[in-house]
Length: 364
Ligand code: F6R
Ligand code: MG
Ligand code: MG
Image (cartoon, rainbow, N blue to C red; front, side):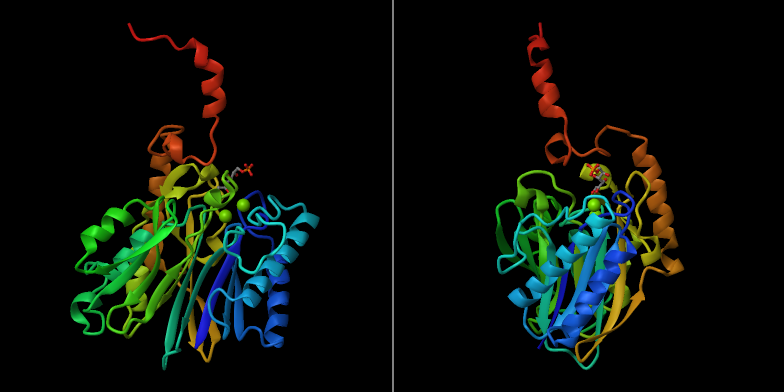
């Protein structure tokens, strides 16, 4: 069995929250290459989207393994030290605990991990996002694994025709539930349509029970009880054979869906698919970005990545996302561009409400 672990954190931005300094990438690469030499890891790739650092690792220790989580924690700490030295912005911002305590869960970083038997050929797509939240993958995962207008294989491929099981987490209530598609899609959608409360954690093939996809569902604000930055999720999807084809997994991103995040984590904006070189959100700290790294997994080695959105076929989505960004920005501080009061990560409301409280008069 091989495990793919994507562990991620924002440990400092360059410049502001727009991107990642190359010294952080090289610090992480050096530490993971030592772990590979010690045979803790089979292989790794260090990626970034905006100001978030993503450690993509393969190993044989299983999901949620202390040694792998400790390794990632040490990398984030080492990168934080570099960020502090360079006075990068928000150094260590996602590291909410003072010391590692066995597992990254609840400590700030996000995680998406899956363990499986490597197939004869194992194409993997790994999505990295910035300026948005856990839950933003609900719509694309639904399209990939349950929408026949997106995934032709659900209709015309015997291997996919049996459908998929969605594991949904209630992020607020801290519980989970499974739904089978296609029979239970209407039940499933009442939850998925509310991505700030419910997020798809994993998807399984109903034909084989094999894991097909996993995403990070951590919400920093729930962990810390206060605003500490956006969660900027990741998602891993196995492709081909019993799973959707690479092109079916990428197809949902031709539609730049509106997601929560953008400036101060308090706005709605279009999720723009882009090449790694373009994943440096600078316009109103956005708009939200998504990149996709494609790998062939070969005896645990990550052959790649291919930069999957570096394809002119996604130019239309990018153009539409920019038009949507212009349109939404013209709302300024008004909803629905700005999030409703209760969902904003930044707010001045308690202070202002307190200050003007005595000036309110009853209606005549
Ligand atoms: C959103 C984000 C940025 C910051 C904004 C203010 O996820 O990271 O939009 O919220 O730049 O940042 P601070 O409060 O750190 O000055
Ligand atoms: Mg940041
Ligand atoms: Mg970020």
